[in-house]
Amino acid sequence: MKFRTLSELGELCASSGLSIGRLMLEEQCAESGKQPQDEFAKMAAYYGVMKEAVQRGLTENTTSRSGLTGLDAQRVIAKRQTLEPSLGGPASDAMAYALAVSEVNASMGRIIATPTAGSCGIIPGVFVSTQERFGLPDEELVYALFAAGAIGYVIANNSFVSGAEGGCQAEVGSAIGMAAGALVELRGGTPAQAIHAVGLALKNTLGLICDPVGGLVEIPCIVRNGFGAVTALAAADMALAGVRSVIPSDEVIQVMLEVGSAMPEIHRETAGGGLAQTPTGRKIMDDLKNKKKQAKAKDMGNKAPEGS
Image (tube, rainbow, N blue to C red; front, top):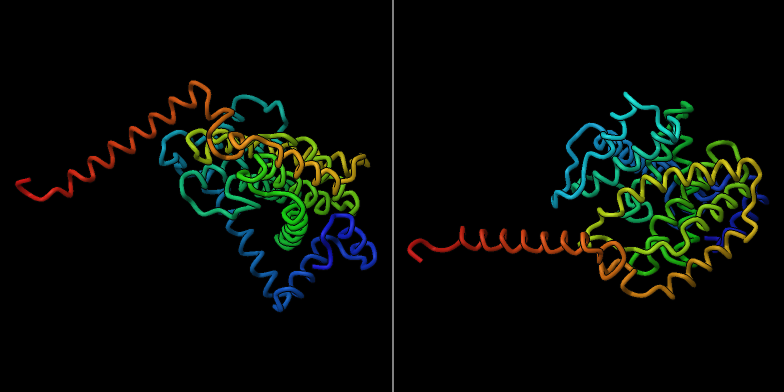
């Protein structure tokens, strides 16, 4: 890639007159050696999987194997029949769709990791709800995915996108930044505004620990995807209105690296601290271990030879 920072990405867009999404498609082709139509088709297929996951999460049983989570997206949509969402309809849709995709992931369904499985709901939540609301063609959403990819590329190469390395700020935070920047482009904003949206979004998740109960990407990860989708909408709206990230977005990414590196290991996807070690978190973990032991004992019993 010709860029390693968001600042360099913005300069390339300014000199070429291309959007972030279209520039990223060119860069991707230069790196892979593939034709633009082939790279575009691959990304379009990814978007198709995202839309399928949203639909599945809203219509099918998404109860996870652990039994801890599932169907919350459908509860949010159903409640709208009797109560106007405090968020308003569009933000409520984005939140519900993000929950839906994360629940599909927890129930072992097919998703696209953007940038990880634990944060897979945010970009589909924002993208699919935005497409429905504004009647956008798939082509624009696919270019927006390239824009999100460019932002994720910068974050991954200068900080983290893994909760095990940098806490939840690295997973959910990166996804929010990617979604916010891409949404600015979708709504007609400039590359500079998109880059400000990334910084505005990331600043709101700095220090967010990764503390999955039982080590599963369910609690609190699924609801954080829902909240993350709403944050991405807010960051995009601020940037489109001219709000700037006073601390340059590249510097915010460096702060995420600093904070994540200083974060205790127990708060980095080890289930050793945070919500995972609350009394309820520990009880859930013990229950899951006991279920696993019982299932193993039952399995061994079924395999015992006759007469033993």
